[in-house]
Image (cartoon, rainbow, N blue to C red; front, side, top):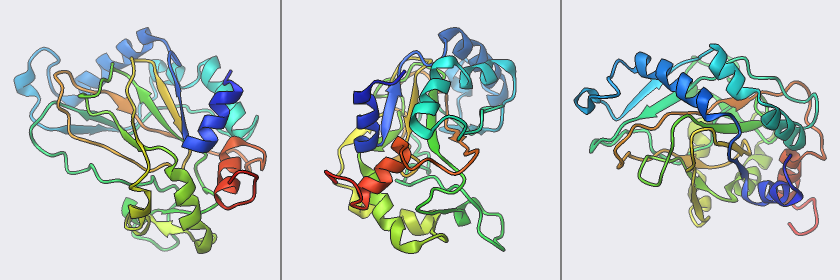
Length: 256
């Protein structure tokens, strides 16, 4: 269970770190599967010829179990509301990062988009975000390897979800596209930076509006992390911490 202090920190900073959210043994088994799909050898660094390899959806049991531990499910209930989220039947979007002097080319600050536009071309860059956070209730960062400060941890602008809520509010239901919103994030640059570090089995549960970014890998061992969304099952509760953060940003709660 998340403590009251953790829930308040989520509202104010936009994320909470859960150490030991799933067993290290699951991370080790899942990582073996991921290694095979990279096409690289875990024992031969000369085969690590790209700074990042992106892998798709994984429905094997180690991934399903990692996403559905009792501790995670209890945290989802606390942050989103019981019955308001869909259980994850897979984990996907693994940007596996390798030590490299080459810039990965994907390290810009952004907010993950969550729904496609009407009549779009299908490009992810056209996907949108709106003030209701349609299509997503959490951004999650699952660490499947130990991640230190040199191992390309995701960069987080703590508290930036509040700024993003204020950017989205005037745009109504239509919201902003991924690129439109990314171009307006200069207002979040003064926010303190946190790094998504931790041991394998750690999960960061993040507000869907949290501004974050990748970075080059300057360590020695590849970083394995999944960054799936948590999908809604029904309308979000006004009292949930996810919605409370939005209300706070828009001045609807004391202390905003």
